[in-house]
Length: 304
Image 1: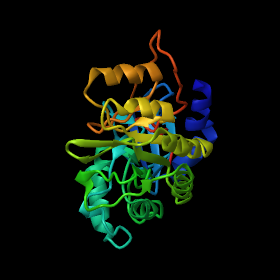
Image 2: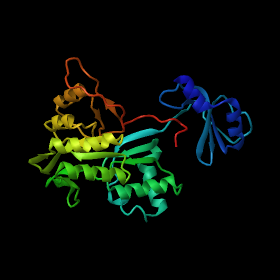
Image 3: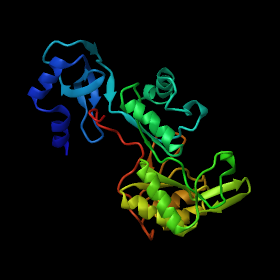
Image 4: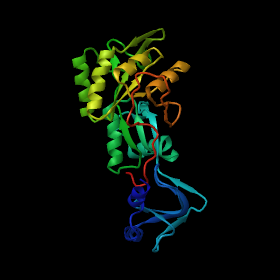
């Protein structure tokens, strides 16, 4: 694995040399962490052309290029923020918002903190994808944005604190299957449901397990994850039985953590840009492994 990473990241000397000649800038002398599964480079050079990293080398550049001395500093691959929302009013009408406004908002919220990939766990998908497209077109810099789009709720169970917003409701297995397929066809990177929805401060409406299973079947059939907002400890059982992969919130009840540990669930906490997997414990039944996570995973310095 290490040698494959070295070949991918550093290339042969000739490729690195050619990159140097065409580069606009070289960051030299730093301790470089090129990726999550690669060893750090104590005296590295990061070569940049037109604002993009083109090569990571050990030692000094081979030809003349404008340099910034980074001795004593650290350069890392970009961070993931696994739980964000593009729901504030400042993100509305993204297709026509001024480029400078969006650039500044993205910088203040993400890029100045080192986030190069963010996962939106609930927003208006078309609007969020408009932001992503403008970034991808090169109109302004920003992170790679993945989104689950609008969450699904149980029938007649709109979370009261989201009013007047109206979310799509799941009523039957056939309808749930169709809506889940449509959401992925629209470009969602995952599907999110309200496993339990607070329709008032005193009343919680759970998502029927058969509907959870229907949505999970669609998501997993497309190689996507199913995210859930369980709302309280009682809905964790339905999440596990229904096939949920990731919890976007978790109750402070210690029993929730034990339940997640037994079933190897991933948790996306909203409190900070981090991810934790609660490992299996002996004696737990019905264990289910999750193959990947949309949490905090470092990316290679060469990833777009």
